[in-house]
Length: 627
Image (cartoon, rainbow, N blue to C red; front, side, top):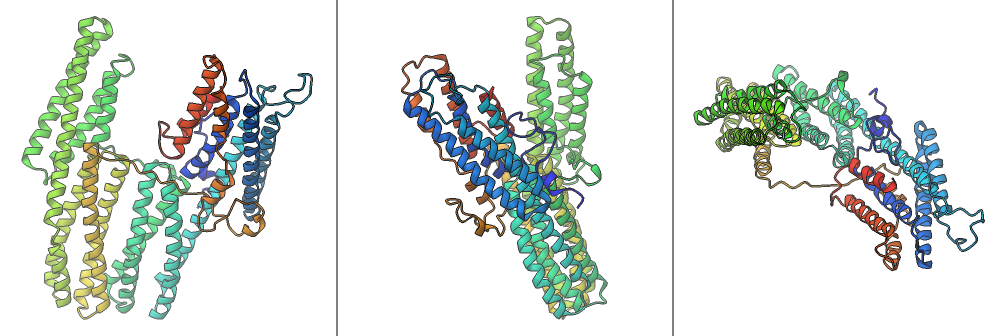
């Protein structure tokens, strides 16, 4: 893979945090994000109190303890970073520089919070957080930048591990394709199984750690393919070995290998954030997302009559209505739904014409009556789009419910198994035609559900389901043909069973997907946040025995960064002293309390709670605190 694992892990010009991180650093995983927040919170505590008018001894001691805690935690963290650098020579130079900067910044913060000589005359050369107004801010910026750099570089090691694991899987797959004996196949497949388990663990951790929900959904789809295809590869390969001259067996096996390779490449594309041939992997716009964007633009006219053109709005509606043709042209859409969708499409055009008419008048003359007419036109247009959205949702979900109920008995699959064992080629051909018809119905169902799925991750899941039916249908047919040609073959029978189980499993998944789509539509869906981890520690545990309480657990990636940056919440010590200050109405005190509230918001962020939802929110909050 041409993409550098380190650069793809987080170096991007798109970041604009402006705070601690380099302008080129972008945080893409929750574990890196979560690790940084306590450090931001502690530094924030120090900066909040640098201008306080009254300082008790307890306050000064608390501030000093915070500064020392930051320095000690950074020292432990840097030691781990240096150990990682020694094990990964391609990162050594960059990692070492970042570690040196982090250590220097931590020591600077410790010096600036050494308030022991504050009672001495101002002429003293001793500089503290209170006498150097900008020093602590500069040190904080350097510290956050360098720590983020270490984390992002370490994250690149995880990516490297996944790429290495993928390469091992691919190499073993090539051996499996070429074997000619059962004994050799069993030996190599055993190795392949172990490699797939390792790959599954690495990619599972990464999937849960990803911040981008679309990437997470794509990763889940690829991993599901690999999981199901592993058993298919076993039985398809054994069938091919048992019946080497059978063309349908070869086709069956080749299809599995091809799909697994595509899934492996998809995982690497996601992990390295690469785009094949420079293309943006954009799925076609869905009706739901089109309506959502259209309504945003229409409602935006309340604030600004000139921020878009009528041509722009008309084009957006045309695109949405073109997509409704997927429903009206479908042989599986009921007559009632088709008529309602056509009526609402016609009404949407009329409502937009009225809106544009009033809108153009309002641009020339903003009278009270015209603005009221505009508001009515906006409301009627949005209401019509909501009704269209409701109608296509009903059409797609009712079709899905009917099809899933109709096919729940798996009669075609059962018939294929029976006629295959009987060696009845004519009957197998008849039922394969019925399976092809069923496949087309289910593929159409997935296409329509994608339009109404409500979220981009669910759209991706619908696309994955469509692809699974498209691919698995022909694989079942080739497996059934092989069994019909060799009706006494136990392995051919087992192979058909495996592919039929995959089909049944996907139908079961569709039932769950349908429930989730309905939950989103009804507003019942809650987001689940899972925070995972950073780089595996490797073999340098023995070198760090003196760094307790930091323990490097080789089974959990998260331990390095989270324990390496072990920061006790000393913020409360300082805040408790602030509350004792006499002048609670003092403007600076009020400002400090506001800052404390911001720090608490950051703490909630680490738990997946509160108002801060993204890294950008976090850094914006920190930026406000600093400036």
